[in-house]
Length: 306
Length: 276
Image (cartoon, rainbow over all chains, first blue to last red; front, side, top):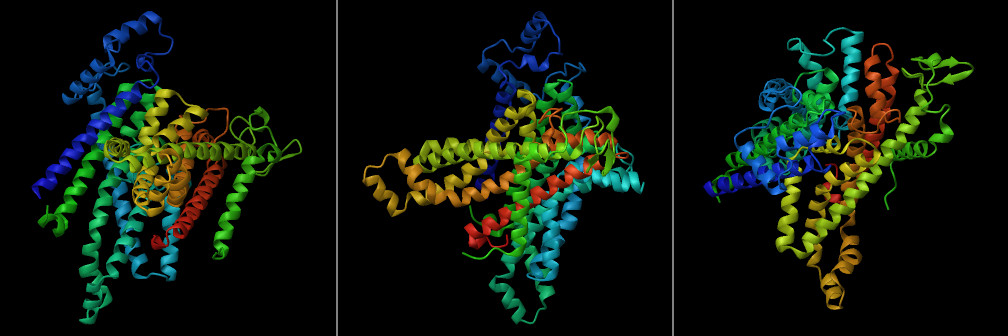
C-alpha cells in the first residue's frame, strides 16, 4: 500500500515537471517570448530593454532553471499590463471558477449517474433508447451554443434567470448546466458500463437466488461496486470542467480564470495565461493522483496487496 | 456484411449532405459570403431584399447568413480533416516505433504522451494558438500537434500485441527491415482501432475549431466559420436569434452525426465493445 502510494506520488511529480516543461517551450514557440509581452507598437529599444529585464536574453537552460525556481516559490511573475503580481490576479478569480465547476459537477453527477443506472437496469427498453439519445445530445452540444440558447430562452424570452455576470446563486444555474452537459454524458456512459459489468457477475445471480429483489440487489451490491470506476472518472472530469470554463465563462461573462485567460490573451498579458494553464494542469495532475488513491482505498484488492 | 439500419442510413446521408454542401459552397451560395451591405443589416430569415431571398436572414454587416454557413462548413470540415490527419500520422508513427523498439524509446514516448494528456486539451490548444497567432494553418498545426497522444496510446498497445505474432517473426526472418515491417505488416493490422479513435477525434476537432473561432483564436474575420459567426451574433442574441441558432444547429447536428457514426464504427471494429 505505502509503496503503491509512493509510486503514484512519484508519477504525479514527473507529470507536473513534464507539464511545466511543455508550457515553458510553448511560450517560446514563436521564437522570442518578449514579443508576446510587449504592447503593440513598441520600439526595438523598448523590446530589447524588456527582453533583458525578463531575462529572455540568457541561455535557454538558464531561463528554464530560473523558471522552475520561480515556480517553486510560487512566483509567477508580474503582469506587465496591470503591474501587479500574477499570482494575486489569478488567485482572486479562482473561487468563481471553482463555484462554476462545482455547479457543473453537481449537474453532471445528479443527472448522469441516475441516467446511467437506468440505462443499464432497463437495458434494451424504450427508456434506455430515450436516455441514450439524451446522452448523445449532451455529448455533441457545443457549450457556447447551448449557453447562448439558454440565455435566449431563460434570460431574454422568459426572464427567469440573469443573462450574465454574477448575481447570486441564480446566475450560476445556466453556466453550470451548459458546462456540465458533456460531463453528464461521460458519467452516464461510464455508469452504464460499470453497472452492466456488475450485473453480469455471479454474485448478482446468487443474491437473486436468495430471494432478493432486483432493486435491492442493485441498490445494496451493484451500485457500491460500480462506484469504483465512476469515482476515477469524476476526479478526471474536474480538470476538464476547469478547462471548459474558458468558453462557458466567456459566454456568460463569469469572472473566473477562464474569462481572465481570454481577456489576458486579448490584452497580450501572457504571463497570466501561462499561470492559468499551469494552475489547471497541476490541479488535473493532482486530481489524477487523488483518483488513484481513492481507487486504492475503495478497492480492497489494491489496499491489501502491493 | 450486416445491412445498414435505417437510422444509420439517415446519419450517413446527413454526413454526405454536409460534405457536399461544403464542397459545393460556391455553387450553392446565393450571395458572396464576404459582401457587406448596409441596406440588408440584421434581416430576419425569409426576408426579401431587392428581389432576392435571404433564407436564413443576414448578419450585422448585411451579409447573407446561408452563404456564410455554407462557407463555414468548409472551414469546419477542412480544419477537422487536416488536423486529424496530422495527429493520426504523428501519433501512429510514434506509437508504432515505441511498440516495436520498446525499451528507452517506449519509455520516452509514453512519458511524453502521459504529460501531454495531463494538460487539458482545450487549454493546450488555447495557449498554443495564442502564442503562434490565429489563422487557418496555425489552427490545423496546433490541433494536429496537440492531439496525437491518443493515437500513440492505441498504436503502442496494438503494436506490442501484433509484434509477437508469428507472421511478423516470419517477415523479419525473411529480411524485412523495420520500416517496411511496420508500414506493410503491422499498420494494416492495427488500423481498425486507430480509425475508430480518428472518428471520435474528428467530432472533437470540429468542436475545437468552432470553440477557438468563437473565442477569436481560430478562423479570423471576415472569413466565415460557424464559431466566429456565433461569436459576432452573440451581441445581437436578443434582436437577431438566427445568427446564433442556425450555425449552432449545424454544428450540433454535424457533431452528433459524427459521434453516432463513430460509435457504430467502433461496434463493428470491436464487437466486444458493443453499445459502450
